[in-house]
Amino acid sequence: MSYITKGINLPAMYFYDASYIWGGYSRGGSIKYYPPVGITIASWKVTVFDVIYLVLGTGYYVVRYYINRIKGKFRQYDASDNLLDEVAVDIGRGVSQTIPAVSGVDHVELFITYFEFLRSASTSGVPYPEVDSVYSGTGNEVIRIASLDSSGNETSSLRVTSYRVIGMAKDYEDIQVASENPVREFSITVNNTNPYILEWYFIIDSVTGTTDPNVDKVKVELLDSNKNTINSTLIPATAGSSGYLPHDQSTRYIRVTLLSSKRVIVVVKVNEAINIAYGIS
Image (cartoon, rainbow, N blue to C red; front, side):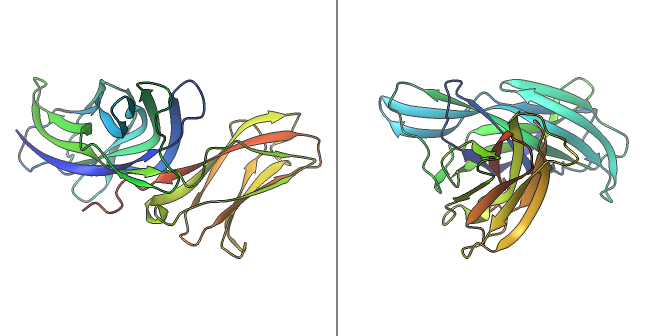
């Protein structure tokens, strides 16, 4: 049985509530695996390990981070990179999911659309990841993509390890826009983490009042240092609506604007998606 090892980047953020679990979306979580030619492949197994990917602090004041869950798509391709099969994956910490191999498969892709993280603190007063910081990961194997034979034995695998851990571009905040204050603008810090940010993901967390998704919108803009608009998107002002913008390295501000004539309050969550492959050969 042969295997290869590859590192990935993972995010770290300040946990803002007592649950110690945080979920963040990413459209850039693509891990491809090209197994050796000539091995037996009856099925694939994707595993999320119950291991630490970041440790902050020393001695009594220590905080540890784990991947708590991933969601996304498992895709199988032929040698010409044609998509043969795609299934949804939803895998918790310490759990595996097995997917039957399709005829003619040459390589596979685990496309992660959702990461959920668990923070475990040994005591109060432990350190938190700093804004705009890059940390070394533990090097532990966090995810494995394995090929199996008909007896369920592993014939090859890609073992994914924690390489770098990326701090957020700003302290956590629910961005609230209301009819009385329809524009919110905030700065981000990206001197160290800029290349690691792949995109920005926005979700309407809650709405107080009644809105029409066809009429009432939230506009989100990426701004440069002179507050010129780099890119923008419109999101229906209804709970659960979402949108995203590719990151531009000249971004220094984000503006959130409520476009509605109604008396409503809209809470928007702004997340950055980390490029898990940046800086890794």
